[in-house]
Length: 346
Length: 284
Image 1 (cartoon, each protein chain N blue to C red):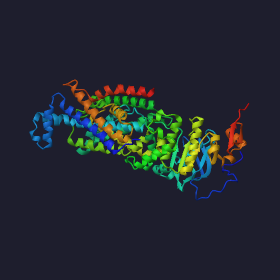
Image 2: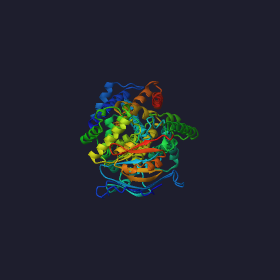
Image 3: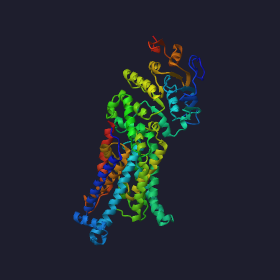
Image 4: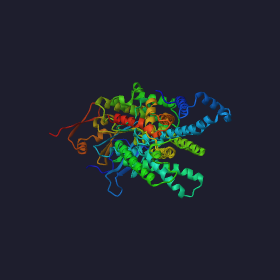
């Protein structure tokens, strides 16, 4: 008998934080303009000792103004999508659930696009209008997951295959609407079709947006984490969880809202980056087991690692032009999805 | 039918004093309909019985007689249409899910797992209702889980994967999880369904012993007439949503009554233990 202890959880997270650190260093180093490790280390020390002014302006510009914000965005998007995927898997009792596969990302994208289109017509203060896109994405995500949930029910039970099919069809339907809107609405700031359909981390935002994303992530992921042991029991079925003392309706509501919020946050700044919420929780489960007290934080870190790494690949493989990060995650994720689907069926 | 919906009690049975009654099912009825505007698809007519600590109550009856519904009502998961169910004076349906799980443990027909788990992880799930949110398992939780496994003779299964043990072993681990809840009331829904005869006897023997040792009140839904006769203190006989009789096996196991309920010719003899024994006869 080896129950989870705080010490073990801490060590597991520490290892992943170190891996994330290495990946971040790699992401800063590689790109159209290579950055030497020595210069990077020197600059980090200079920043730490409050001597930022000594950083050479070229490096300073590339590292701190271009690559670092993009990495930060990758960390938040990866962690959000991964925690959302883990939550949807527990909520729907389906190991193949993922915001992208279920069409929730497309729903969030559509919500965000509606918000962007509506924004000029609404006389809002700048602070409120900055919140409008993530809010639209959240509502889009929440509405889609509710719709897919009802599509996936058969005789009162969630049917795994029907659910996935419902998700795929919903995603394709919503993508078509996104294409329609992108083609007909020629507003300057709607970011383009490829962004929403494939995901992209190249947009840079104001500093306040990163704060907003970070705080939003910690609030939503924290809310989900309070239900971690409930989710463990929910995997055995709702009735059984109820008998073991889980307040099933409350847990479902908390996780449903928080996971939709995480998807909405991620999609509103990066478009629909796929399969992260599917692959990362799976790998973490294989390595560390399916206890959500471990799974949620390690999946968050793993998601951050995966997206930062995928984005580095996306930036560098076809340099000086670049791929959408969603293309990289889909190239890896889609075959894995098929593999898991077939493994589950046999 | 010889009796109305009011349960008959055998004259020889001692009157139950209110003080040591643990479970009290009082005129409980229920109706289920898929659509509120339609007539109910299933009804449970007013049912009453009481049980003391250490007692085993068997709910018997053919398929669709309302056995499992009655169990869900006792578990507090379903709300009765009328009447009430008291556990040590508290209405089971009104307890919070957590408090309910501290007092009532339910063993269901099957327990599906989405991801593999080891037996000890499974048993520790029984401690969920006793832990505060976000707390890790304490030393006490671990000791209680180990004891629970030992009590059902499954200590050696602790590190095995749940999907790699036999049906009988699995049932013992599931029972251990229920014991880890340290309940006052243990409810079992056809626990012997997928077990061979040796495992069935083994399980009910364990239940008898545990009920005596830990002073649980046990309510078990079963199809096994003879196992119920052997191990139950009280039998609740159900048919088509009606509670026909409540009483000791000796008073309930009468040939005409059982033939009428189960719709098949059978014989009832007194076994060597003084408990009745039922044999179904082929109609030819």
